[in-house]
Image (cartoon, rainbow, N blue to C red; front, side, top):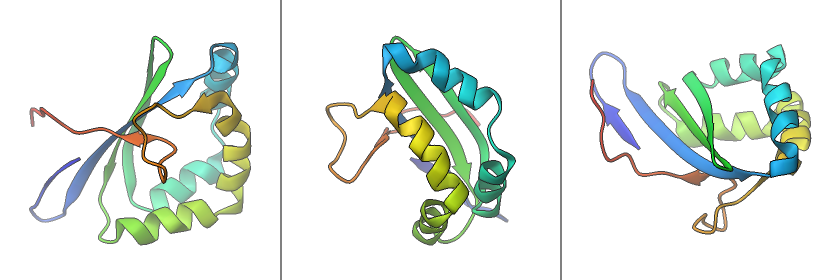
Length: 116
């Protein structure tokens, strides 16, 4: 995680999770047409520039957070019925990395370099 402060604060988040080999194509298919309600909730909760990358059984997530209460915004996302239904489809495609904290589904990654 990293941040810069100026007119508007922005924090970069990276995380990682495994994708099940037999579920990779299903996961890609789901993300080829993410539900508009899910995307709208992310936008309303100050998530910008969100990407997910794949390599060798891992999914790597990156997004920028521009709000001022990350915990509250994440709670709003988790409470959203459309997002909960989306997760019911995507979660079975994934499993935690060994180093994930007990409270993490996607494990946080440490940012070691950024070129602005």
